[in-house]
Length: 286
Picture 1: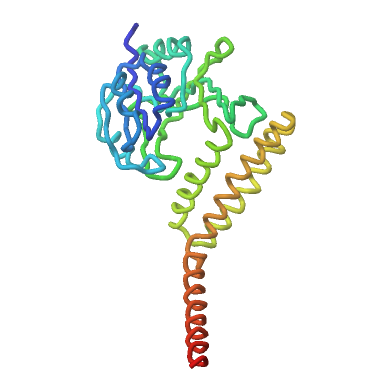
Picture 2 (picture 1 turned 60 degrees about the vertical axis):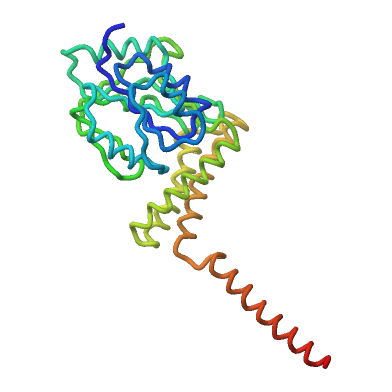
């Protein structure tokens, strides 16, 4: 196979179930670097079969610790940022290699034909959908940041949208395999996002989070028309809106006297009242 001129950077934590298929799918790249956030399962052992290098980084929900490592690393002219939930069709990989190994190719970003699955559903009516994914970036145009959800970006407008090929020849993203997986991730992600909002005033953070709930409703009802999918659409819509509702609740709960403060104080007060009563009852019996 021709040299791809591509480095794959993959960030993982406890992904033993998915990582082998993912890495095998990207084994055509000249270089695979796995950033492991101190997994406690077989993730690292499996990754060693495919990766040129495994770099241990401190755990975080976002990618700030990975960004610190990428910025100081040499790599191929092109860098690709899949996730453990990613898979790529072999024919699409072949087309990528043709572009990234062509010295006359005058673009800095390649938008890859994209197929996103949530709860096993792939549909243009799903709130979780996109046509292309701009995660293949020329190294010279790569822009790294510590800003949440914007850690990996680019500073060029020379974007090439790869044409769609035969059906199914896509970059796949397979997330939220079931309800348990969804709620587990939502709790972790929204809690982390709420903590990130502490950089602004509580009032601003609440307004922003509240607006995101209404924006999510507009997305599922008007932009995606998820109701076309019947009960699947209803469930996907509620799950999507649920994400932003839970984020609002976490934002609201930060910095207030919640049960962590109120309940111990209440227990102490009632304990004291019972001690007084017990002492009084004991004295009266003497």
